[in-house]
Image (cartoon, rainbow, N blue to C red; front, side):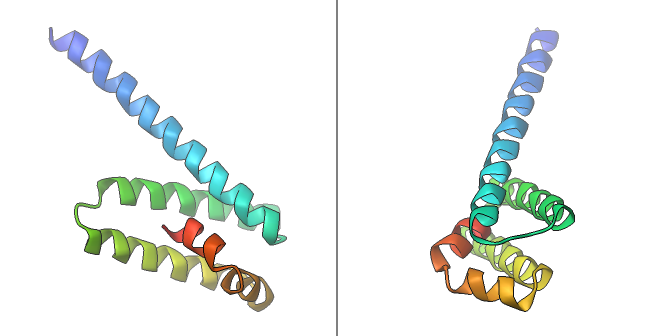
Length: 100
């Protein structure tokens, strides 16, 4: 019985990780579609998007989710050049997708 529960929990964890990775890849693809970024920044943004989705999945309240979104938006904008940041701020729907 315990073994069956462990196997089921592991399978569920793998599915959640796959879902988070897919969502992070989708976010980065949307970013790259509008903003030209180098491979290092692309990898950094992917890591940030994975972190964002993990944190949003564990946030318990709307206030916690908003804090995560605000932090992610700040990290995105501080990680790109001024010109790239301008492109993002001129595309509020994209910035919201990336940070929420």
